[in-house]
Amino acid sequence: MRINSRTGLAAVTLAMAVLPAVFLAPGATAARTETARASTAVQLRLPKPTGHFVVGVRDESVSDPSRTDPTTLRPRRLPLRVWYPARSRSHAAPAPYVSAATQTFMEHELGLPTGVFDIDTHAYFDAPARRHVRGVVLVQPGGGSISAFQTGLITDLASHGYAVVSMDIPQESFVVFEADGTPIYQDESFPFDQWRLDARVVLDDLARLVPQSRHRTPIGMFGHSRGGAATIDTMFHEPRVQAGVSLDTGVILFGNEVSAPSGAVEAGLDQPLGLMCSLDAPCSSPNIVELTSRLRGAHPQKELDILHNGYSDFVVFNAQAISVDPVVGATLDAWWPTGTVDSVAAGRRAMAAQRHFIVSFMDRHLAHVGDN
Image 1: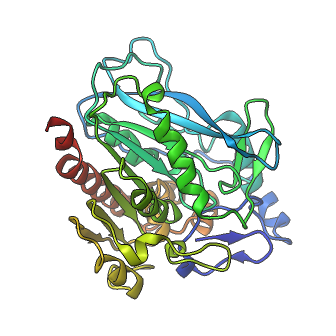
Image 2: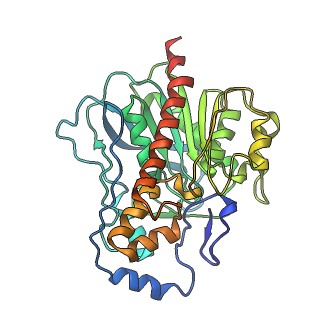
Image 3: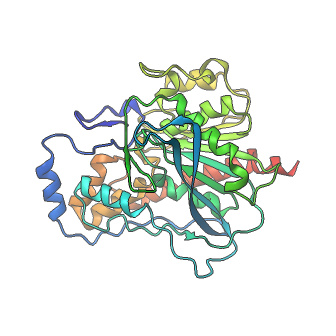
């Protein structure tokens, strides 16, 4: 859901975003200070990836000279992480969950103790890559969010042999830091059609970003909320994306006062599209039924007993935190309510179901394409 810095938590039914550019509403300073004073032994943990391969990762970026960033007045630059199956960890350093600048920003704005986001990603910087990948999968985050919040799903795909290129969305993600440290904050008027243009500039540069890929290596995509809607819209405009999964599709796909509906709403898709739904946006909701009626490719659906933000790493984080430090846990669940805060086991089951759905879908509808 989108959280507005002026009005606080917005209605869950918006199903668009996870975080704002400025986290706290006016008047929340006292709550933030109280939380910051709390000592904590919280150690957030992601389940280990289920595949056989070590996961490597490196930071990358791409630029689009056809678009100018309004903050920097330079060509639009997308920060990326490229995840891949590695031969070994071979002295490689563990990859942090987010950059130091982003972590400091999050902990300060949420009033959390330093180090809460020191999370083992089960991935290693610049680990030596395997020679081949089963496919390449692009990832876009929820509206107002960052792709790090899908790390549990991303690393699992990479451990099964896929290269994954995750991107943040300047002007849409709550903050993106330029290489020189310049912060780019969320602009709530950011047009939805720019998401597919961001995906396109990544697609155009895949030979450099994923040198293990070949001409016939298949390409897929997944995203959460607005990123799920962007996955569908990108597939409609980019036949290079041969299969995709949308996690709790954002209503932005159907248009709003800022953006027109995606062409996929009326024209449908030929490519396979997997859909995962939540209690906030069930698969039986009219928008999803309308969309699926126009899907000509395979379109498996699965609904989990979680809330919208349960399609993020907080599905396992919140219950872990609240069992150790109720103040920290309550803060996390206030911003990212998942429906699993009362049960660590329920959160792990939900993430396991998401991992299984995505990997099985890509194995069935993507990986075999490269073998033809």
